[in-house]
Length: 95
Image (cartoon, rainbow, N blue to C red; front, side):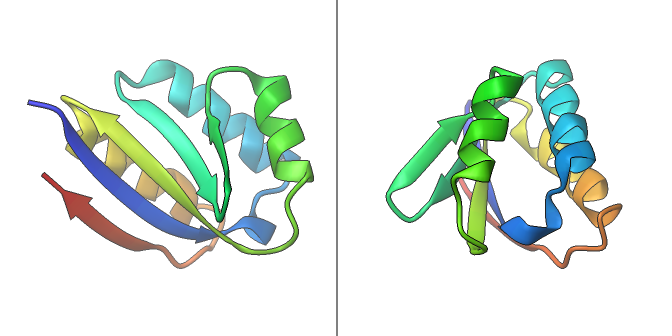
């Protein structure tokens, strides 16, 4: 059964090295990862698209959505990755 989780994160915490780490994580996990900011969204599949998306944002909160059968496990790993950037996260789960 697919599950969806979301994390609220400040976009200004994502420097280039953090984006590369996020991209690598997304390539290694089994869930689909999406980033949403107001009326814009990006599925994390290609590094150039991710960097372009993040560059186009003003400093705002964004929501990272984790969807998949292993999304709970992947969400936990993603939270650890984000904590390394010293960013407070607010997590929600939807079943």
